[in-house]
Amino acid sequence: ETGVTQSPTHLIKTRGQQVTLRCSSQSGHNTVSWYQQALGQGPQFIFQYYREEENGRGNFPPRFSGLQFPNYSSELNVNALELDDSALYLCASSPPPVAGVAKNIQYFGAGTRLSVL
Amino acid sequence: GDSVTQMEGPVTLSEEAFLTINCTYTATGYPSLFWYVQYPGEGLQLLLKATKADDKGSNKGFEATYRKETTSFHLEKGSVQVSDSAVYFCALSETNNDMRFGAGTRLTVKP
Image (tube, rainbow over the protein chains, first blue to last red):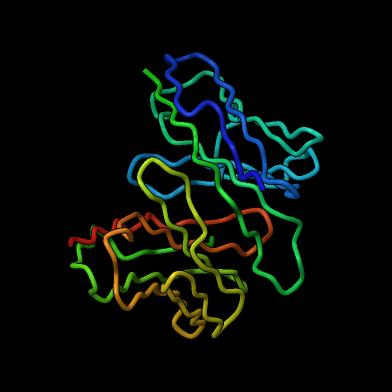
């Protein structure tokens, strides 16, 4: 069974540019969530996609946007990059919820490390 | 809003020592609780989980009990190994879309 895969692993951009990060969800998982993890901190929730629609969003500006495709893979797009956007971006996929089982069990990819210069 | 507070690190232990990493949470309802581990250069791996009060999650010798009365989910292991060196994150989820993480606790185990 293939786990969550993210690409690229590392990326260097300059301020003002745009970036697209990609994520393939684990087989059988129909929900994808994206997180930003700054150095030395815990992941912060950006948004979640379910059935190709945004299904919840954290406290991130509109220049952070996303897509989910029919095969449940997903993209994170960030426009007008700022220096503070430098972080590890994590994608997580979740299986369909099951009654009586923990809510929102998520399985993470290895992340994309974005550096903005 | 919901939040998680973790014991500040770093934590340094000798091999075979007992480990406790404290975690307390604030939530309006009945969240699910998780511990994730992050090894250097990798993403997060689910270590254990608990769904309701008094549930005990366990995996690879690690345990944590969901304590509603103290709003806590402390991580314990009886005898740590060098290979347990990593960053540990406590997290909660009250809905099916938003997971809140603590700031993480770095554990270093020395031989």
